[in-house]
Amino acid sequence: MALMRWIRSFHLVIAAIAIDWESGNAEWCDGYCFIERFVLNRDRCVIYTDSERNPVIRVLVVDDSAFMRKAISDMIESDPALTVIDTARDGEIAVAKAKDLKPDVITLDIEMPNKDGLEALREIMRECPTKVLMCSSLTQSGSVEALRAMKIGACDFITKDASNVSSTIKDMRDDLVAKIKAVSGVDTSGRRGGSPSVHARGAAVPAKTLRSGEASRISRRIPVYKPGEFELMVIGSSTGGPPVLETILKDLPLDMSVPIVVAQHMPKLFTKSMSDRLDSLSVLKVVQGESGMPLSPGTVYIGEGGSHIRVRKSSAGRMAIEISDQPSDALYKPCVNELFTSAAKAVGSGCLGVMCTGMGDDGAIGAKPLKDAGGKLLAQNESTCVVYGMPKAVVEAGLADAALSPEQIAQAIGRLAPSFSRGSEKYGLAG
Image 1 (spheres, one colour):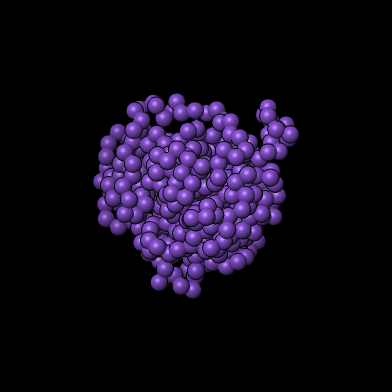
Image 2 (cartoon, one colour; image 1 turned 60 degrees about the vertical axis):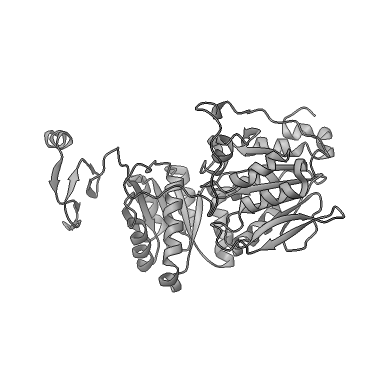
């Protein structure tokens, strides 16, 4: 203990080392570093070289493939704000190490021996709740399992292709690092070499118009909307979005008076699986939007991953879906900015926008013309977001009318159905 206190009092320049007590093996880091703290547990003594002024996000990597464990670990450790504290080859070992090491984030493979990723996830959420990113294959079954995992408690997922890692490594690495930082809740913005916030490519974020403390005073009251008040509803979501969309949409009445168009950041195969899942859970018809598809009240249109989804209104007043790959250099496809901007042009004050959980600020640019045209905008509140990025951007820009939980958003939207007053007990509200 005296040695520990002495080390805390002075910066020592020595080589960093991690010692496995059972095997006696030592892993030496390259070069020299300042020792400021070290952590002892049953199996390992790990000396950390970063103080609270430069926090490191601690990650446990779980995959049954030794190749993928090494590849994912290398991607993570390419960023100075992240460190891999250990790896596991199956779900059973992962649960034990999650309880023992208490990582900030776990990357968890789905298909593994002994105990698969979904079983391990359930146990982790029950015994030692941790931020988890699922690693899913780019397959139909992989997309279905990833969505199931998010319902169980995973924050988000990354896609992997073990047969093609070399050609996709940069995109996978960028996605992995950004999502680990976003879901961890650890602020690494002050670290040298840390990644900047993720902003929509080619767009300037609206200047913050709220003074300090004003954002916290945004309305928490559920707005009172009436059937016929809006012609269209648009929703933007990203990290942690699918379970939120499920909460918002699954209990909406069949006689909703508006069509609903959704831009969720997700690969193509996954948006199809999500639309199928939501369709099975909701009385509303949920489909993946196709170009030229007319918009009908009571139908939900999910933007296809890898393409932009917009709303166009004809001279005859009919609304339809437009699918496009332009702008091709957009950071996200579908892009919430594109959807919101098109909705503002199509129906102006007849649009209700909803901004859900997600990293970055996609949607903040599109929210401004929507509000300028007289539309309304609801934001998911901070306490219920997996990542309070996209909703925060519109709240701090003074564009949100209210900040609500997913359940409260569903209650507000439910008022747009003529049947609301007859079944308001279901929502816990007076009609």
